[in-house]
Length: 262
Image (tube, rainbow, N blue to C red):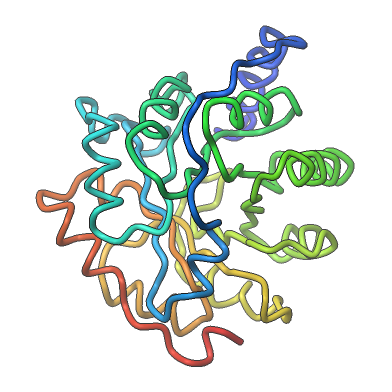
């Protein structure tokens, strides 16, 4: 059984507990711009900066992080969006983290979790998320399509995540606005930055934003995925371990080559 399999088993238990709940919407203003608008208006690498205490592959990363303090540092130093891990069993996150971050910053927030049911989307939106994650590897075609359109109806942006050609083909049938290419294999958790370059070639719509996810540790690696066509990156562990988070974020905002707009 893979790590992803184990996570999905836990998610099914969580969904069963949530049942048909309704959730109280947090009372905060919406960000002035969507993530897509922010990315399309800049000519430097967009950054989804992540708040992540732990992961199945790395164990505890930053157990004592203050999500609000971390989020403010991200926002003040040029992050385009903030990703908040809300899974507890594997990543030690929570919806309380998301709500706290939403109250502290005014840029888009991604609810980073393993979505398998509409009730999770309702919960994320109520907590203040503007973007949700749909992982192709965790969903069959019918569920992927259903959740995608449901999130659209809820006025949420969707980051569709893939890590191989077959998943990219499935996701492209949705004509997605944002595609995340995960350099980490969710079954083995091995990282290969070549994923971004290889899969980016399959995306021909110039309006689709490509996000390179996982394993980015240096400016040179960010420049590499920029050359491959990524307009944004999702970075968690590198920022969570950084001694100078402000400098780390600024260092990753590399200029985009002209062809990054495809």
